[in-house]
Figure 1 (cartoon, rainbow, N blue to C red):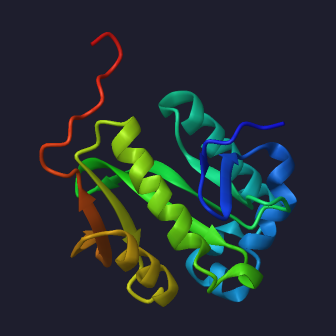
Figure 2 (tube, one colour):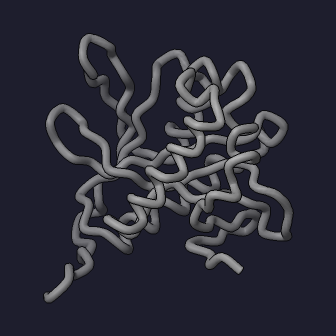
Length: 179
């Protein structure tokens, strides 16, 4: 059995595996997902996504994780933490994607909130963010429920929304290796 990284009241997050490719392909297969992730239109792209996350687990101890119902059942999405470039700085981002049939049930918000807590408990990140296309209403809704602050950033000439939460003042940051 694959280990659980995080668990919430309704969900369990675990590392993705190559066997998740068919289910994860379905997450990105509907028109709403394809609008914002057009590059995920092939099985090869999804396989590359899983391999990218496997590399992230090895290098950073985190990545996007498979999201499953805690009571059991198939993968319904992914959610987790990856490092992203934000205006020349390396920031920890919460990303999330949910199967069309499972949207609007609060799963993305629930998983993302768990990832925010995990980020501050397990890393030294001074802030955690979610980078959102302004046209992605569903993702904007989730990010606004998870994060405290919002500003606009540019990626190339494209404006994006940066929702973020700073580490609470006075919170002790975890010690790094060798501390």
